[in-house]
Amino acid sequence: MITIPFPRWLRIAVFAGFAVLLFAGTHWPQLRIEGPFERPDLVIHLVVFGMWALLLCVSGIFGEPGRLATSARCFGVGLVYAAFDESTQMIPALGRFAAMDDYLFNVIGLMLGTGLSMLVRTKPQPKPLR
Image 1 (spheres, rainbow, N blue to C red):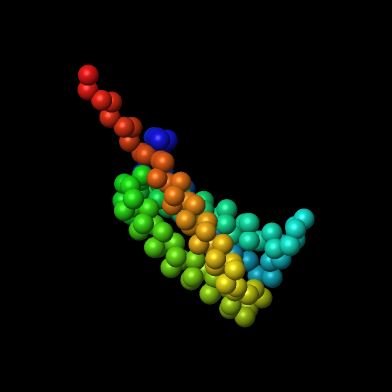
Image 2: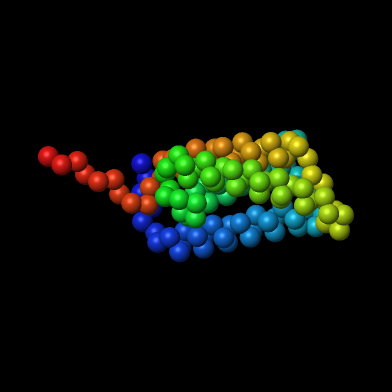
């Protein structure tokens, strides 16, 4: 287990900052991503939504980090947010488009992020009595 000693307000602030950057990045008008292989944006979707989910779980907004119930809540919220994020890219003024494979990679990232969050605690494990 990994123990994160930072106060809850700081964890929430880090998540909020990341969420704002994610929204800005996914809605930046006319953004095109080139890379050494076809569709590098799918890797970005996976990594960024994985980080989003991990930071949301660790923030403690939906419960104590490291618990299955917290990860499940964060995954549910992530599914809704990823659908919202992807669908709002269809706004004509943005010059973007929405795609099911983008959403699929968002969901895979959410699964990885919430899964990894099960390894994180914000309070140290109690030492066993001898």
